Image 1 (tube, rainbow, N blue to C red):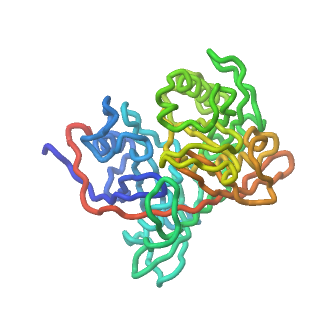
Image 2 (image 1 turned 90 degrees about the vertical axis):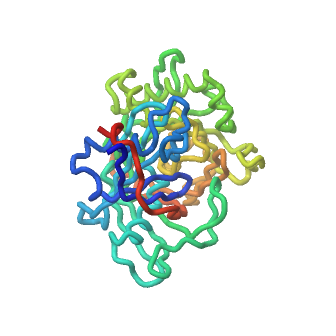
Length: 385
């Protein structure tokens, strides 16, 4: 047999897209999933286009979601996420995709994993197996399926859709066990080739390292193409990411950190400023509270990963962190307007002190999602062995 096939759904979730699988359709041994996912996505591809698969050549559309019955008493479904690298053969299960989380509830309803309620608002409780965290997805049901039409717009996505509220409960420490892995709101990293660099290492939703843009010779208003065409800045960002990975306990050394390219996410932050957008418009400084340019798997995001935005929101509420020093708002306003290359995302987070430690109670955001097709995805059998 030259080709194999699997039941699949293709969905957009927020500013990402993914191939969605039922857990029961995949091999029982998760160790055998990676070659299947690479073959489905068309990776590795030295041309970075994934033309022979379902991927789109950038990290935000080279994703796999696996959904099945819950193994957690406080959830309705399990959700496992896999990030498939574009150019190389890495398949990373260590992180979660927040944007694609918005598609999990609608998928569960539409695929019959959760009974469809009467028309109106519903909540699907999601257990993410990557981070062992619970997320509540609240959205509307209409005509026996997840609602699609609505008035909510997302910068970076054309048109409008029905809103999906995501509440990440107790998002701190999914990868390291601690909101502040080093115990400090701000650290000085000894970065090879750069020397000392001030950074905030925060683990909420996904672990992130935040650096002031000016510390790396950047402005924080660069578009993705400018970052991609600046090898020196890319080198600095990767060096900071590897140093942060070691400091957070995610990798034993810089070489090992290089093999785990997706975590931590690395981000440049800056105070609000007039900034060009990918649409060609200019975003006014008055419409944002903080600017971010975020990287994952070595690529600059066209928008911002939702987990990265949630982690940044939490970081803005951590006293003494670099984002807290940069953000142009206070804890009195729960919403934080994060400026990114495609526009603005509004997120919220609540952090409180318990004894000697800080605890993130929740982080929330709104997204939209839509089913694009359902059927069978074909992949080369020879590549999935």
